[in-house]
Amino acid sequence: MAQEAVDTLGAALPNEEVTATESARASARALYKRGSLVWAKIHGFPSWPSQIRSLRPLEEAQPKIRVRFWYTNDDAVLPLSKIETYASRTPIEPKKIKSKTVCKQYIAAVEIAKRILEADGAKNADGNQDAEEEVWSDDEEAAAAQDEEEGEQVPLSEWLTEGHPLCGASVARTFGKSNKVYLGRVTRWLPTAEEPLFHVEHDDGDQEDLDEEETLACKRAYERVAPAKQRAHEALIPKLIARAKREALANLPKKPKSEYSCFVDATRPAVAAAHPNASIAEVNKLLSEKWSQLDDTEHQVFEAEAIEDLRRYVGECEAKGVEVESKYLRRQRSLRGPVSALHIFKEDSEATFNIGADPELLTAEVSLLLQQGWDDLTPEEQAWPALPSAVKQVGRLTCPVRSQQEYERQAAIERTRHEAELERRRESRGRRDGREKRERGGKDKIEGTFQGDKPKPKSAKKSRVQESTTPEGGDKLSGSHA
Image (cartoon, rainbow, N blue to C red):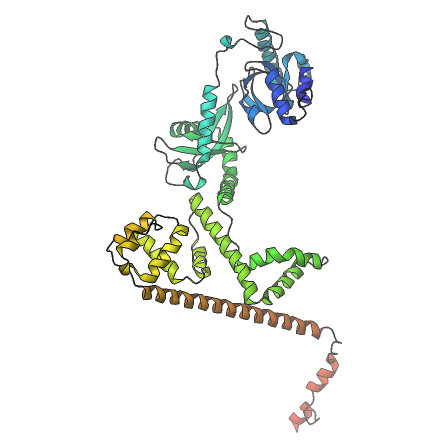
């Protein structure tokens, strides 16, 4: 009955507000304990005598339990639906297992479970043991899980793909009592303060991080692997490299959108809905026509969206430690709007005097400073209570700064730059629109030549007759003998 409560996700709990997942989690805590003897099922094998090693995975979004299979001593984290109490079923007939190896392992595992139930530490038929009888602990597993979690928190950009002789080395790892060999390759390494870490990707898709000593041991183990297995592994190396590249690309920030991309994203749904039978190429052509018909005001809307998305891209690159591509840096400078003299003054003063106050708090004060000039500040104005302390200190400094006329001149240069950039874009759009019109016009002309009747070609017979006569109608052959 208790197992049915788990399978029905805790339907016996009276509190209706508790979700199904929470009910299953509560039922599992009441039913299972660390050290409990259970049946655990994985694909391709019969339900196997196992021991619960940890209940920590119950806290995950989908509750699970870590178990260890008897005899093979392999660990697995399984969902609750794959675990049953040991008293809920009896061992199957070994002859039903097709594999002789698995059959022998199953018989040995059942025998181990039988001895556990008969041992003095067994409390009941479920196989729960006294805590003092447990000779193992989850502390090492918890520490390993914490180390793994800390390793995952390191940005992928800090890992290196070269610079160490173990990078790209093939390795071999053995797992379980059967010492099954798994081959893999070191794809990247992380230089740390204590010792470097090496990321290994196995041929079966599993991944793990090893220290230098473990990696060297795995490299030596690979040299003892049979040549046939080595050749099979080397054939998979290109796939491993491609997979590593895909993971690296997935970690990169999404590229910023251009003005036209912002326009297409905002307009495509409406255009596609208005022309449901149009192909993708036809929809793209309609979008291009609409784009060419926008005025400067409408273009500025999508230009602002492109600027915002570019800022998002630069911010994500800085957060992930990824270098911003040079073409996007150039675009960031070209997309910048005209800067006022006040803005230039604020940037200059903050850089010169290292003002660390909030720019929003500095706006009014810096406006006053810009109007009067630094050299014209009186002691009373420097002591103005509304001024932040950083600005007060700046007012007492004697470091020379540029005059207001210099900032106005810089602002005029910025306005000229911005107007030139807008003019360049208008000319670029004009050239693009003209090119598209010429292409459409040429296409119409080509299509028009095939709409009418095709001119009848001259017959070959008539052509031969014309070639054999002179322009005056005389015969070329007869004329030559005259």
